Length: 621
Image 1 (cartoon, rainbow, N blue to C red):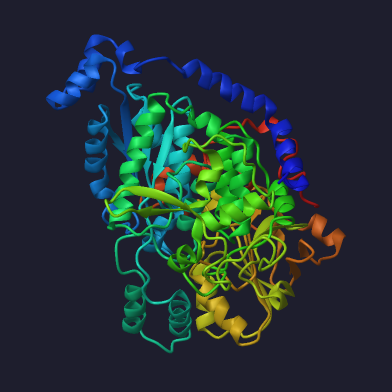
Image 2 (cartoon, rainbow, N blue to C red; image 1 turned 60 degrees about the horizontal axis):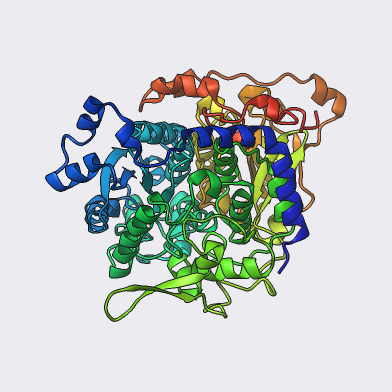
């Protein structure tokens, strides 16, 4: 089927906009590309250091010059449940590589923060910046210039984008992502959310809350809701960076181990040049659009409105929220997975999973099929389901022609909605992103007085004092990257959910973030420019009438224009949030951080002059 005209148009616009920076990036990657084992160009002492700790077999292979050498970069740690299974991967990878006459060296580890542990705590202020820190750590791991290919081991929120951004500096090499898969299903996500709301109301104690949380997060593997971590996995499939259909296979199973072994074989084959797929050619404008389409079609995490522009920039591509908005209007919603539905990613996988989604999007002309992927057959390879035969060998079957559960997955011909799960809002408060796939239609437009808070703790305290029993729009300001690192404000979800359930019209407007697990309350987030960067949100006062309208795309303060133009922005002392839990070390990151629409981090791979208009110019004063 021919490509959808909007998909083609947006891709062409991105390509034209990005031409100078994309060409410069590809020229750098061409200069970096070498023929043969790059380590053999190292001086003798350098090469001796590179293989000093290797066993006799690996040392002979490394110094012989013919064997390919794979770098393993891992985000393993014990605390992050999604990454705990990665502990055993390097040994398996090395074993499989050796069987193929290759070598795999553990090149480096990168940090991996668990947002679930730091949610609402001081450490959350480092969460978004950890993405760029991971990118830097990845670059350090690969900087030895001794590798022919890369295996990246990571799953969660900032880790996959960080690994990818770092690896794109080495885009002349082939790169395969190796995931871990979701934990088995525990307490259902809706039941967990109900318990959280009851606790917020004071109807359940800490012991009952902890019991529910422990039944939800109970085993190695990714959290089972469709938040940022699981959206990462969907996007790696759509960008062709996984072994096909690898994303949602549970850890600790024979199939998962077989897929990890296959990732190693694929990495060796790519490094040998049996299939040409350097990372710089995999991540192009078409792949970025494919990833964005997949994000919208599945109601994925709003955090990717930050991560995708940052990833694109690392490949010399300029992606903005106008692209996201235009694509969203033409991409149907095909999946209902919590928080956009009731079931978790295990049920999504059972209903057809990534293979069904990709097959449907390809058939509907909503994905570019002519992309380079690490799998030799291109994106069509990803419209499949992996299985083990009687002998334990891997095989791939076509994705099911019919959804296994129409309440979870639907075809393009009969979607849950005609447009995607995310929209862009614009008005005199700035530009923002709102996730509508989990918001009921009757809650998508809220016009109410503003209540202004300087942090989420102040809003929680007001709720406990009984001061929020009314219609209002909560403005939580000075939460942007330059102010405090742009933390997630997920602790507000139960409070605002309780108030909505009591019949009040409530919404949130903030220059901060919400968790990928956030859902039913309308939240205009990532407001840009942020308050500390001249953003208009700092002008809002208690009682100002605001409008958040996801249907019309409005984000407005309904204040007389003359008054609005002369009103001075608020100023607050942010210094108490700039120390403790390591935050004092990230002062440089806050000072260098770019706006949300460019990714919100401190690595800005695309020079500001390339962007046609500034964030302030995009916003009506």
